[in-house]
Length: 421
Ligand code: PMP
Image (cartoon, rainbow, N blue to C red; front, side, top):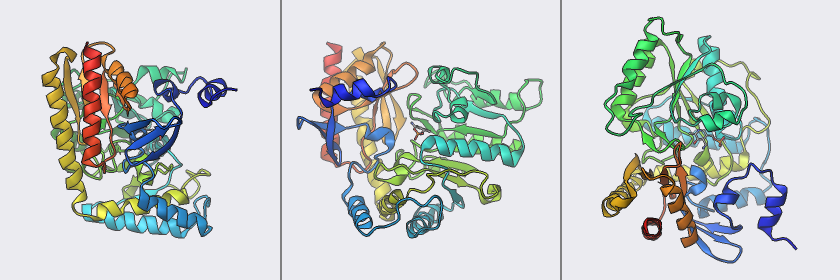
């Protein structure tokens, strides 16, 4: 008889990839730990690519969800009014938007990250009457054709097999390297300033403030401010894709808070459901909330189970100490990574990212991939990022116990040592 891994390999399309990078069969998970079918423990420094910011099977969310299910709460409702939806919207407004002085209408565009991006691009086109969108090198926005057309990754774009239209890719902040002084926005302004550049005024500019898949490139706050000013000057909508960098990943609920900007549209997904359940939100400046009912619909908008866990997840944000605790632990991550870079110059590494979105980029071909492979063998789950997989990326849950962080650090150091020798 075949084992589970063999059955999956036989029947699942060849598109599967994490089956290959983590060749084991997982059966259980709790907090920052996962177990395989032989009972081997793994520390999860991947967190479902940012979909499990509160860890696996978070007990309060689990309790609420189980109670709701046992009580025959509504599971599927299209976008009908449900108690679960109302409670989520109310708490999201009270706990997240209002205290941050943000005014958005919330739209449920479909279940996943790519759905929120797709809806943002569509809405921007509808309200501006323009078609082009500017996006950035190494940006990642999803796998549907619209989201892919603004994704700065040629390998992923080739997967669509057709030319992708209506998108112009501009160099992201510090595109060349971290000490890059090139004023990439000066170029953008020249493009926009009618100078025969061939680029028309776009409907929107879309970006991540820290590029999650693209290599943990973190835009400087001044750069974001300047970009925001350019958008305002030219009447271009600013779309921040916070699918990966949002929900506390950078240390604040929204990644753009420290830059003090208010995007016209914000895309949220991954950890907004809190429990790893699919949920996506498109936050829309009320002035732009111009779709007629039915202009953007879908069967799975508003997953009631995810509303239950998402509402419970917001309780973390009611605690005024929560953000500070993420930020304090993030300093430990920075310190650890800085120490690794100094202690092991052989890896030719430098620290990237911010908050709970940091990693090390190595100038040695294949180094980071090898670190992740060794880490897996030592019982730590971690992934690479960047166009050449040059970054190994630490993505623990933002509520991880310090002990979990320390254990993870220990295994990473062992994996670095193994890779060097
Ligand atoms: N935007 C960003 C910034 C992402 O990181 C991702 C997923 N990695 C997406 C959009 C797409 O989300 P999904 O995979 O849920 O469609």
